[in-house]
Structures are given as structure tokens and as C-alpha cells.
Image 1: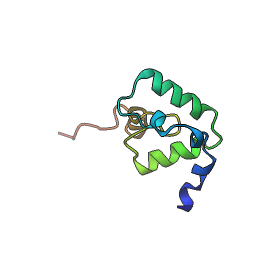
Image 2: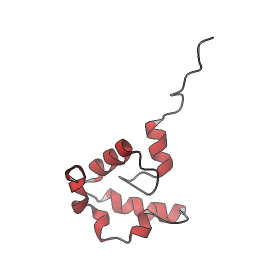
Image 3: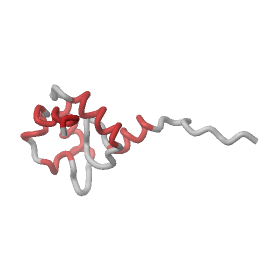
Image 4: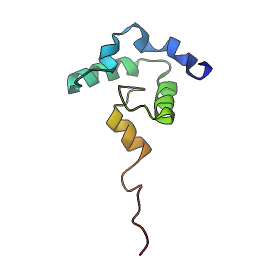
Length: 83
């Protein structure tokens, strides 16, 4: 729990969780969630946690699940096996 103590200081703490974890995300919802993240004093800690923990759902540190996947596995990270 000590590792995520920064959560108590997150800008999202006073927001509706559905904004960050919607059942059916839309571009507008993602933009609204990212706008909250942009004002957050712990955005970097949140993002680092989500990447380290492999969070597969929700907006964390201003990144969508797809953006986190691209950060963890950039294009071309897999190389073909040697012949």
C-alpha cells in the first residue's frame, strides 16, 4: 500500500470513477479524463505505476490502455527470429 500512497493526492480522487473506467470508452470521455490527469500533481507516479503493474483497464497517468501498451511494447520491439 505504501507504493501507491500517491493515490490520495490524485486529481481523480474527487471525480466519478466511471470517467476513468467507462464500460464503453469514447473519444470525448477519454479527453475529459485526460484533462483531469493534466492538472494532477501525481500524474508521473500514476503513469509509472500503471506501466509497472501492467494495468489493462482505465485511464492512468493520462494514458489509455492502448497508449500504455504502445509505451511498453513500441512498434518494432519484436524482431524476427534469426534464420
